[in-house]
Length: 379
Image 1: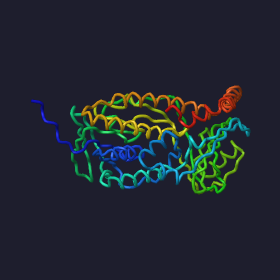
Image 2 (image 1 turned 90 degrees about the vertical axis):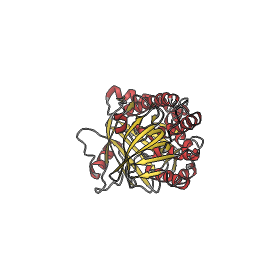
Image 3 (image 1 turned 180 degrees about the vertical axis):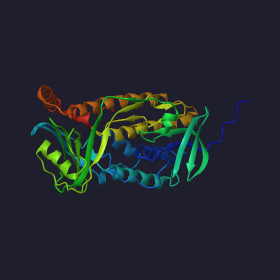
Image 4 (image 1 turned 120 degrees about the horizontal axis):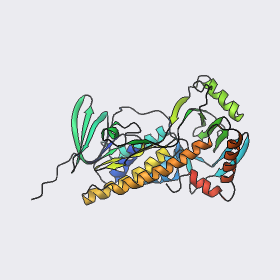
């Protein structure tokens, strides 16, 4: 006689309640799947971080029931201009059919959490740290630490949505491979009542300066770090922008820019047995280009469908999800590496060649294709 199926605590356990883990939980809960999200933190993450919502990401947000709320709060970009040495090299327009929305990640995260709490208020379990995960063949076993008390959870599947520095990915022995594209940047969000609806990218000799309008009369500045520049203080940050672009934004000395490293990595596998990786746990995409969070949402949409079907079939096949996820991440990383190269310090012939490439991409025959590239068409 076949052995009886084990009695499990849940069908799916998601590790991590970032924007990708929450979106996945929303999609699964909508399907009536018994899902729980274990999150180590007790409070909200107030950092702004990602701000761009691209069409593929918006499509999954719509599917999860938060698209309308995101649209209502976000600022819709009408387009963007790429400049070098004071001259506009290319201008792109974003259509209503393929909008690019700007909304700080903390607000998108809050909308997803509100949606999940409304549908299934017991799904999100804060203050629960997952210390280990093991595929037992017919199910997954997770070790949980909740306020110093240890226990185990069992589930048909586990999903690691615990970010770039996933310790569980390391524990499973899944490789974390460096990909092309790495640089240091600093950013600051400051008031700007005249922010408008267009993004500006200055790709001059000294390196990239990005300027994005935000909702509620704010603007984000991003500056690529260069030797000898002080980007750690508001005054130094402002001086760098002025030297590189000729603009003099109102950035006070009390502003503390946030320094970060834009790097790219790819997990050796996006699934192993009954354990899947999603979002930043599966791939680190440079934020220059704004694809990372959106690609994670696309992952979540794909994985939700895969898990639903696997649960219905009572099998553990996540292979298609894993293959497509890795392929899409590689394509996104190639795009981001290109964007970063366009914003590196340059002079002489390399600068002239770069400006020619940007002008060509902004020419009338290629404008639509270039806009599609920026808005993640094909991913």
